[in-house]
Length: 436
Image (cartoon, rainbow, N blue to C red):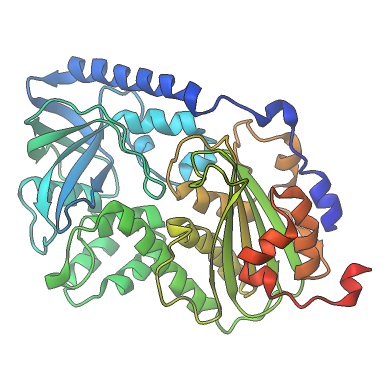
């Protein structure tokens, strides 16, 4: 499909463009929290939470190396406990921001302070938490609580929001967790570095969500070095580690032979992915709406952030785009590895006011993944029909420059502004024929 025909199908539907924003939504969040408190009072027996099923864990980063480490469990919910765990299934089900916050405010974070050095700690509260993390299905637990509920919602632009919390005195398993053989193998080898164990699990079919949970609980790496890893850090560490592995897989692969433009939109975020012939190169450029909660300078029209790497990768952590960089890069590298090709890759992310609350970088990862896989954002009916028809297809352009020039009218910034911020766009070799 020619790029101009492809873009014609992507004009925004003004009738759907503006939904209720953060000021209106905040009242619904309070309703979710009130509902949680009612459900908690119904199922809690004194200071003990019986019959809870935990699908996941959470490790905080404040006061590191003494951290808050928690067991996440839905309270009084009728849904399957596994539905509450962050995964690519949320995207496939077309969850919106409201849905995600309902799930997260429905989880109790039963937590206590712990030292990050765990190694062979498999008893007590931390031991139970680690057993939950390495299991391949939700685990029944009984939790003793020592304090009243804290109903605050903790949001983060990398990790998924966490809902109400309470300090825990104790935790006991009510069943024997099922630990799959590949995870047992990584645990039994005390000489296996964490990076190698992560890549092994990924090759064995584990998605980054599962690996992140196992790493966060200190169940990967050399024995003496096994530590609890704050969830925010572990998410980025796994995306980065697996991304480096995939970059190595395509290092000597042939290049794609045409410039391709892919697109996806989800939760008020639009993603343009430009793949062009050449050796591996990657850049993420983010454009954040004026006056939105994402724009750190309310006087700016649009706030731009970017990060870039060349053929040899990066040597330092990304600051401006943080975990979104590694999540977007992973989605691109997975596609190229599946195709057995390499390419220059530019991801342009436009964050609109419709993205009124942070849900974590999982939505970045899944949006880029599914730009290639043909599953539109809002698969349950949010997405305009035209976008659903174009899902998984790409527009062809004559060159990287021609692709960017065609996309710019769809962006909230000028080509000059984009060129000032983007290394890949500013480094374009412009030919006279490009202006013909």
